[in-house]
Length: 125
Image 1 (cartoon, rainbow, N blue to C red):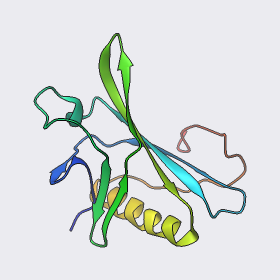
Image 2: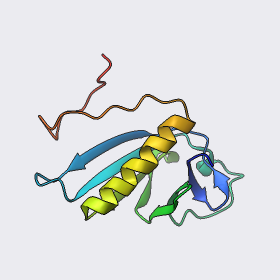
Image 3: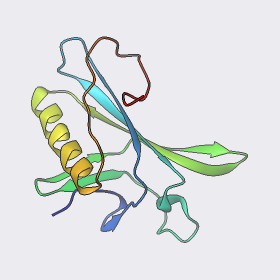
Image 4: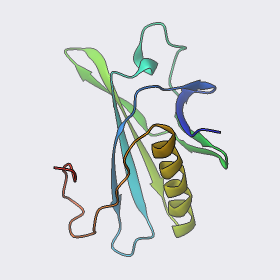
C-alpha cells in the first residue's frame, strides 16, 4: 500500500506538499507543517468542508485537525496543516509515514542537522 495524504477520506491529494519540521531541544515533541499550493481539495468541485488531514499508510492513519486555508486576493490558494507529536514513539511513527510517502511519490527525503531549528532553505542548493 502506498502512503497518501487525504483531506477527504478515500480521496488521495495529488499535490505534494512542502514540509517543514521543528523539534524541541530534547527531541520529544515537535511539529511538521505541510503547505499544499493549489491543492485539488480546494477546487470548487471538491467534496465539501475539510475536517482534517489524514496521512494513510500500511500502519493505519495519522490525523490532524489543524488545517487552515491561505488566501490570495480573497481566493483560497493553499492549505496549511500542522501535525504535532508529543512522544518519541509518535515522532518515530510520523517519520515512518514520511519515508513511505517520500518513497511512494519519488521524493528525496533528507534530515537536516539540528544546527538551527529556524533555518529554512533547500538543502540541495
